[in-house]
Image (cartoon, rainbow, N blue to C red; front, side, top):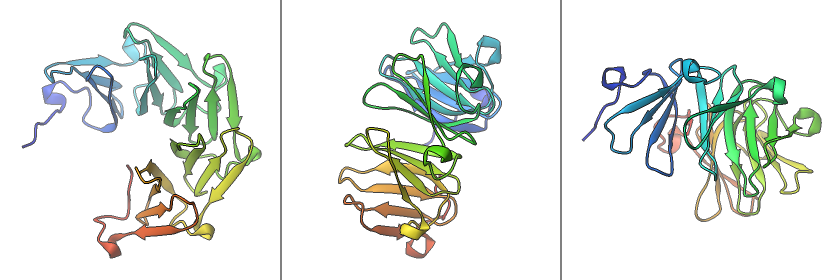
Length: 238
């Protein structure tokens, strides 16, 4: 059976971009225009966070809960807003504070506590764990494309970035060199929207038009899954 949550039930906007369950069991919904709606763990009431409450922008496209319980919201134009774990105050990170671009499509916290932001146009910005300084990784530093849609950290500490038209770039755990996986290397399509690592160590890439590519755990070969192989649709967002 399905239970529906719409504006009628108290959701701030019916156009949902991102979803997160926090450590307490609350569900957070990022919306295109209505900011954030948080559904209580009992599933009975919504709390809204919009520009009125201090959110930097009401178009929220990515969400992360960090190890300390703070919630990070990547927005389309307002950079990143970090809500304190108490849920009482926002801290903003924009181009003014050193972020490379104010459109933040993906967010990840690595094993060391650094926060990585995938931006649409500014490549990657990494905020150090103290939250005080940014390091940027763009095409100039070796990233394959500055439009970064997805991020994954593997068990070795390497970071994988799915890009809009440059396939996948993997940076080693020291953050000094990139390896690229594109159509030339066997990826099905260079527009990579989502990345996932399975229990066996294979890496899966969802593309915007040519299904899914699975990279073997050795990183030597791709297997493709498209509508031809039985996939319902070749656009795989998550």
